[in-house]
Length: 183
Length: 139
Image (cartoon, rainbow over all chains, first blue to last red; front, top):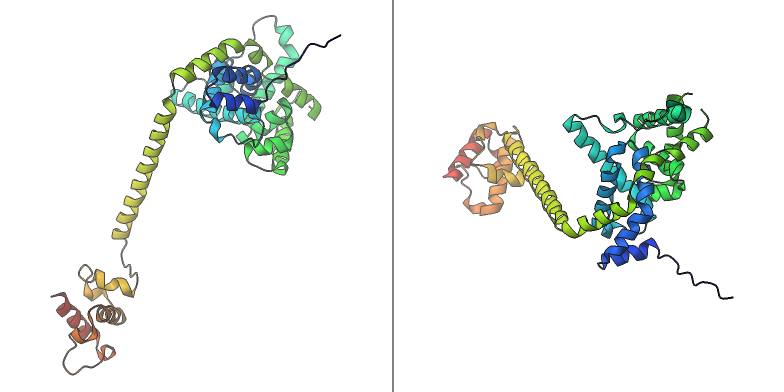
């Protein structure tokens, strides 16, 4: 019996090349692949829920417009997440200038039965608050490693540091978070 | 809280926000924005270059002003001649005056230096005589 012919999905680099050649659908496909992990990263790094959508858009726009600078030193997603970190930093500055409630202090969605959210949500909220206390590099290394599951080599390539330094940042972050996020 | 619990919590961070995201609508909006706002990068680059140029002007201007305001600068023998008119000769020591004259000597030829009568070498002149020679060169 003949097997259905499976067309392998194009690699990110092929989609980037297609986008650079003017293929809008290639850009849309890259968004489909990476928008949710990016949203998770931004939310984990302290983006208010209400702004995650806009920040995702802004990150992709910035990434597509500077894609010439992407040299394949790391995966496209990792590069995208680091751009997301910059976008979030700029957002935080603007929010501070407007004197609105910045980043993590924004109200999170806690509607529904409080018992459903109880322990896990509380610990999650503590973790978000703890992440806010970390230096940006530690926070990003922690999220790239613990949330996104990336290897130190990949994180180091994206953040222009060494795997050893990334490992050190991660362990510092874990140590401080353990102190902050106590049960 | 142990590391495993921390990492487990981290993996769950942002899952609600990601689930709420309308990926198709986001992709559509991004493509439309890329199509409709192609010139913004150029504007950004222009603004960036403008800022760099403004910063350079400030730095260079500041350097010029600082160099003019800083007192007691004696950059070197070769620059003495160019500062001759601006500098007060009374501020110069005997050795500095001699340096200036030597520099002048090299510039305009040893025969034309107005050495006072009876003197054959600049080293024999005292500060007052050297000043007199320099003032005569100023014209």
